[in-house]
Image 1 (cartoon, helix red, strand yellow):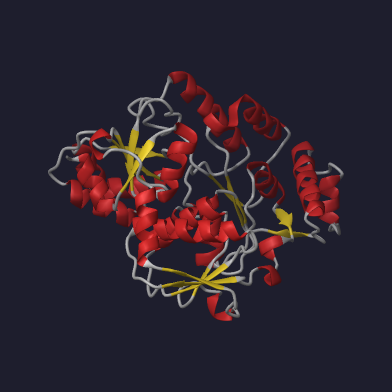
Image 2: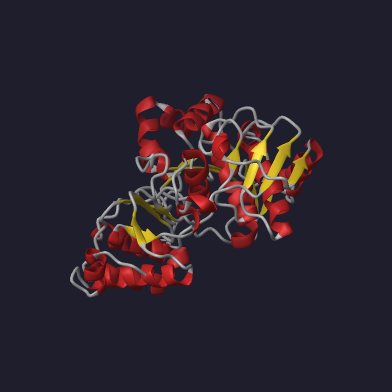
Length: 399
């Protein structure tokens, strides 16, 4: 690979051990994927934050990078942790886990990483603009950034994202290159959809259809006349989870769609397929729901406002987690939404989510509006799921 003088100095250790290790990771990654050079990035999002996923081996790596002088060179934020940093006891997290999770957060903080602990960094200050090169981990955020924002990133792993943060660089391959961002299959939606759970179901249908072909990676979609930020957030999470898709184009909605030639290969999606996807995401009995969670990906302030209206004067009868960023939770506090929601008995779980928290064995049936949460509920925790609209999730909590 062709390196600049500064990059070569990093490789030779002139910027310290951690920076040397970081650029070695990036050069190796670039050579694997045939990159000619490294490119500057404007921001980074790091995944692999929960101690439940990292363990001692991952924490040891972070500690070495921090002790080796590693320091973020660009705006860098973190994915959700395994617990609410302030309110972990109320959520039933053990003291032992809390101590280990704090060690993880401390290691990142020592490297000047913003310990935001959210899967929606674009709602909490890490908002890249059109054609910015970034290095993001977290599948739903990557799909949203590439597609909805028009920024440019590959789906990074935890180590490569950290390496990008400590150097301000990433290899120039994949979705950083214009020629690799063209759609290769057209998807025509033949029915109207609305709401986060229907957009989640759509992502499942498209993701699974494209994955089965084995030949296509970037869909061009038409037939979607409008979509809110929250619906696109849900769709990004679902299509990434079920299809491994990190870039999509929607005619009339996403910024690069008008630049793209429409592919000749096409598939259609009808109402029956959406309904089948919705049905397939429920394998639990409504009467056995013992855990309810909204916020996968993390809730926006608009969703929290809607939740407060639905819960006003109500009492929840089951364990109910509202997962969101600390930043959004602070806004909810100021607006009075937190007081209304907590008066119902529901619990805020800031900084974390039901995917990465250590809750295996605590519950049996999860009710949620998130297709992504349904996938990980079984894959990680062996929960059964009931997939409902946002409003119906809340109704299930209050009986």
